[in-house]
Amino acid sequence: MKRVNVMGRPIVSSMALAFVVLLFVGCNKNLTTTTDSVYVPTAADATATATLADLEAGRSIYINYCGKCHMMYATANVPASVIPNMASRSGLSATQTSQVTKFINLRK
Image (tube, rainbow, N blue to C red; front, side, top):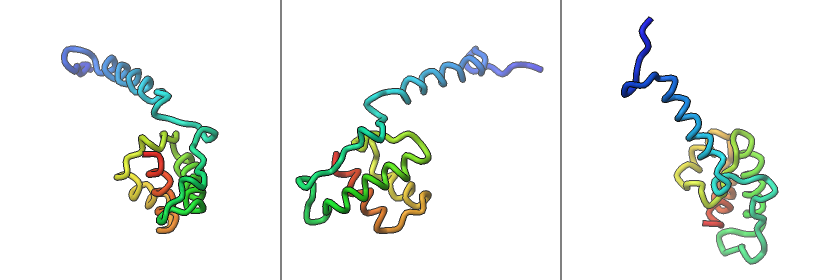
């Protein structure tokens, strides 16, 4: 059986290189965070549209739902465009989606 080449190199080599690159990008400390380092909202963060209770609930949702399936990204690195899709996949209610959105947008 003939080996398929990509740009003159075996696919296996290309896949290994891609894995190494993704490993280094995935381990970037600026992109990921731990549960302990997830920002804790304070009364000073509350606004007319985002109460402290909303922000605290959003933090809890972010940790317990988002962190369930994959590593949590620093909230400043979470694109707003993914929130509706991920909330739907996680089975979040409209209220929970609003709370986690407010929490994520807090640090942008």
